[in-house]
Length: 235
Image (spheres, rainbow, N blue to C red):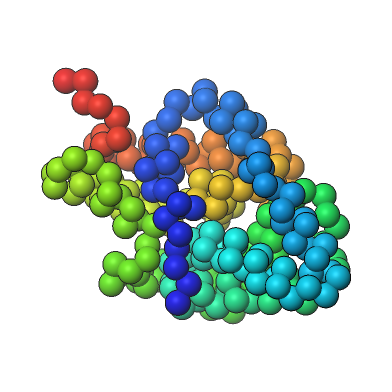
């Protein structure tokens, strides 16, 4: 079983993105760059291209958790998400010479993964797949479980869990391109330029899709009269 690393999928951060000021998107989107060790992926790929199997093992360790979180958010089926992670990483291994070290490994990685996910959806009746019963009903490993660590008391924990689960439910109602953009950026922490690369669109298009996803989620929450529990109550 592939775990979802909580450090790579902070629910509080993703939920906060839904209700953040829309005007902050440009700053937040453009300001999110590769981590300080972004070229570590390129270094590992160069080693892999030189025949170093240990480099591939390191790539797996670095990326299998975020990949799993991205797939689970979009296909909502644990077994399929695990299969997609394995297939994606296997393709990285087999196609490693196709990668040119440019500092955008994650864009290349998630483009492979997204294409495999699309193929799987076509084979498995996409609409039924996206809306299938959540495979994480046993409560094991979902990024939403992090919500239990937020807040000071049982009431706050319960309120925030409900809010996060509602966001998770509403994500499934978004158009595929907007949902994938949102989950790539906020759950897999892929910068917008690499989100665009992964989805085969420009950075400005990725930014637009992210903005639309956030606005729709905020509107859906407002329709249900849900207040963001991560914001202080001014009353």
